[in-house]
Length: 227
Image (cartoon, rainbow, N blue to C red; front, side, top):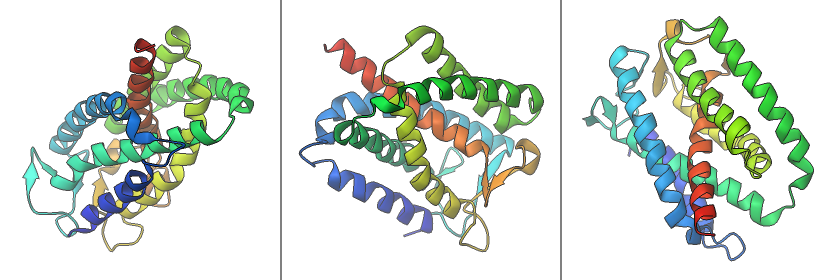
């Protein structure tokens, strides 16, 4: 198997095996979870294809299978199913095992600070494709949540986001060349800010926000509709 494929298998194996834990019972939420994951995949695979076509980023042939579907390696398609599943699993574990009410005020502060930070990033780096599109999507999602939806679960989301950054950045570190001679995924330096966390473009932390938020928002909306 390719390096990228191994990353996806290992990222999925743990959360899937623990999905049957009695307290979390993550498997019982699958019917609520999968619509959000599929919507998430539709959005991000579309922009992935577009960005690959425009040369915003590309993929090494050394660490991926040779087959390409709409310019993307097979492993990249699986990324948008595996990583959201594993990420929302962290949200479910925190919700099941901990009283997170202590984080409500911090969650509200993070909402405001993130909205301001995203607006600033767009204003300053509007000419960088990945930076602009990524930040604009996150800004719209968070603004809709903060000003319109005002959901009571956002403090849980924020804590899950901060926790999930640890495995997310580990996987992304491998993908962006931290342990290999060349990256699995390379970025056009003219389309990103240039600030990196090791080898990871800082914009990927914004993408991680949206990729976690969408399936959780859909899951919670469906859950509320079911009463």
